[in-house]
Image (cartoon, rainbow over all chains, first blue to last red; front, side, top):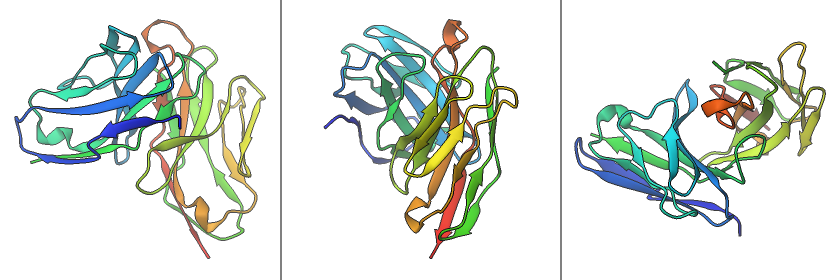
Length: 113
Length: 116
């Protein structure tokens, strides 16, 4: 089954404790991205990757890091989480940029205390 | 920059009522337009899309027409069901070139609740 998976689905952590949210897709997609969803703001792009070893900032990259060492995986790293990073996070992938449909993972709900 | 504006929610309807969710956009070039739906506890999934002016996207009884002259992509359904209760997001994908090419810009989402 074609899908985007994320882990964990739920996470409670404390300020400053490094964490990683994994994202994996099995569709051989080149383009992957991370979004955060906040009430009244819709989804905002954090980082994106056009292919292996090619990543760039989205609209709200501060406090986040990503890497793309393999085509299928695109982890999101919070080196020192803060309460304002409490949010619902989605990973997405598509065949390429542009007009292609993006496929979303199930989401990771993060609470930073 | 690109932006998408959706009608304010929440929207509450009775089953079999007619649904319209307004969406207007601002973008350079000729973006692709999408409606994504998010059911409770799930990720977003594509509902329909249109890639050029006057295209009509349709799926599951929903439809939306890409209106370049009014920069709109309103979502409609003739008869909603309880199972349509979800959050609906209008989005555009820019093709203006540069770093914004292909990025999805979302509206704020509209919560739809359908009662029996």
